Amino acid sequence: MAVSSARLAAAVLTVLVATGFTKDTLRLAWHITSVAFLGLAVALCLLPPTPGPSAPARAIAVTFAASGVVAFVGSRGRHLSWIAFFAVAALAWWG
Image (cartoon, rainbow, N blue to C red):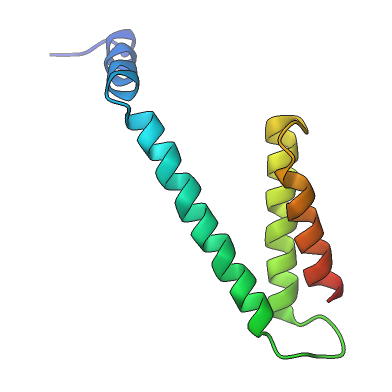
């Protein structure tokens, strides 16, 4: 028995909206992302001081810069998290 794509979409939407699944998923994703970025911050602080930026520091800088781009483009600049992401990227890049 085949299910039409419209019926499937309606069923998925009902599950996402009616059960609060979307809200719970977004809350979980928010907290997981926060923990991941805190881990990156700790890793950045634990890097030994070097005369120039190290490869791990550059990797962290690129990660935060990419996050800044996604936040800026995704929110069209309205969500100000991109400022913090770019600030961390600059600090990590230039030490």
